[in-house]
Amino acid sequence: MAIIYTYPVKTNPAATDKVLISDSEDNNKTKSVSIQDIRSSTVSGVSSIAAGSNVTIDPTGGTGDVTVNATSYTAGDGIDINSYVISADLKANSGLVIDATELSLDLSASSISGTLGVADGGTSAATFTAGFLKANGTSPFSTVASIDLSTTDVTGELPVNKGGTGAITLTSGGLLKGNGTGPVTADGDIDNLVSAAFSTASGGSLYFGNIPSAAPSTGENIFIGSGSGNNITSASGSNTIVGSGSVTALTSGGANVVIGTQAGTVLQAGSENTIVGRRANVVAQGDDNVVAIGSAAAATQDGIAVGADSSALRDGVAIGYQATAAREGIAIGSGSTAPANELSLGSSNHALTTATGTPTVVNYLKVIVNGDVRYIALNSLA
Image 1: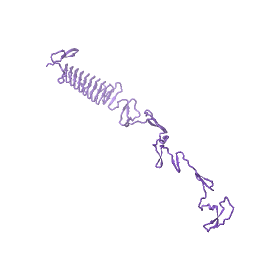
Image 2: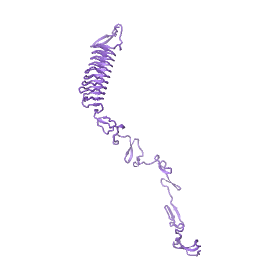
Image 3: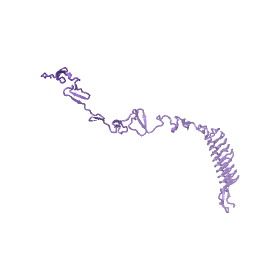
């Protein structure tokens, strides 16, 4: 065992200074060790204290009474510190939420501030007026109340199957012409329309539904109806013909007005006839000045037949259903028949009411014959 004597005190021993120890592992024999051997790694214990991040040591050398001072943390913007827990300080309805312990973005939030730029997929605008959105490169979107189709804002053409014309330009002053699903075209006139033609020359003729092979471009004719005016030539002008299959023989007549299906089929060279009604007709090919009005009505030169199935010979007048007038005869009333140069009123099937008894002035019909006033007795002879 080491014997302890009184020795002088050394205040700051060096690492190589010797210290006497009693070795418990060797029967407490007295041995000497250096101070540095005591602090070596072979001996457990703290050899030194060093300051780390956000930690200070007083004294800095780490000797004597050592005080460790940790830095105090202060929550910054958007951060909450509660004891040892650090969390995000989220503004209500700002878009940032905690979703199953993880930070997430809620695009439906009502208090999101700022605007999303165009480069990031937004509009860069906070508000819009009512209207249509209009992009502007990388600048904020804007709105327009309406789309001006006359500006460069609109390009391309609207196809036919979407209600458009499929054409970018059309001939000035032309008429539009359909082309199935292809682009609409424009023609200077209607010459190229199917079964229709009009001559722009002075005194041009118009044809609808039928274009005769020898149809004259002039003559101021109007033909409307399939097969009408099939044989018309340049020798015939100023005709107005309306009706399918009407006036199929006309070659040189003029100033005729014929309206009705298969009307005026006999007419070939006559002029100034007025024929109205289905199958209404003239009697002879060259009749002029005929008036035939009514289904199947017919008259010859200068005759007038008005009524279905009525007929009148030259200078005759027949008025009424199935009324018939011979040359210069006058037949008035349904079924009436007037021989040449006679007047016929009514018929046995459609009789006029006549007076009976003693003849008086009231029983007479006042008529003007050849310019003279006459009275025709209306008494029955029965």
